[in-house]
Amino acid sequence: MDIKERLIRYEGTKEYQQTRGYYKNGKFWIYKDSENFDTIGYGHLVLSNEKDKYKNGITPLDADLLLAWDIDRTRKDVATLGLVLPSDWEDFMIIMVFQLGLSGVKKFKKMIAALKVQDWKEAIKQAKDSLWYRQTPNRLNDMVNQLQNK
Image (tube, rainbow, N blue to C red; front, top):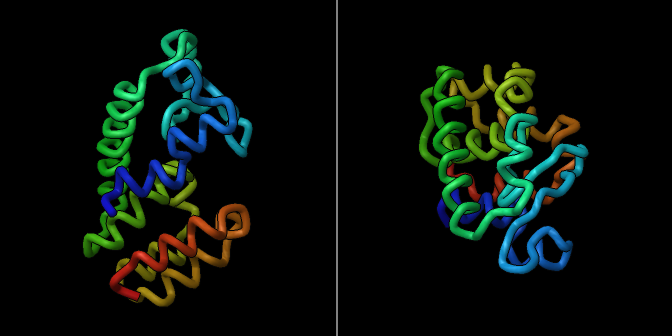
C-alpha cells in the first residue's frame, strides 16, 4: 500500500467520513479533528487564511490533489531532519510529520537520534513512549507493522 492510500485510511476514507457527516452531497466539508483543529479532505489542516477557500466544500478530486500537495510538502519537511533512511522509515516519518507537524516531530529527540544511527528497535521504542502513541495506538502499531527494518 502506498503512502497516499495509507494516509487516506489513517485520516478517514470517503466512506468513513460519510458516516460522520464530513462527506455529503459529493463533497468533503470542514470538520474538527481530535485536537479540535479545522480539517478537510484527508487530514488537511485548514489554516486561518484558507477557511474561505473551503467554505463550500471540496470535491473528491480536490481532496486527492490536496493530499498529494500535503505529502509533497511533508516529504520536504522530513528532508530537513537530515536523516538517511530506507524507504519504509521515510514513509513512517512522512506519516508522522503529516500527523504531528514538523515541530511536533522535532520533540522526539531520542527517536531521531536512534534513526541517525539506524537503531530501529530504539526508534520504535521511543515512538511508542509518547502521548502520540497513547492517542493513536492503532495507527502507530499499523505503521510499525508496515516497517521492514525493525
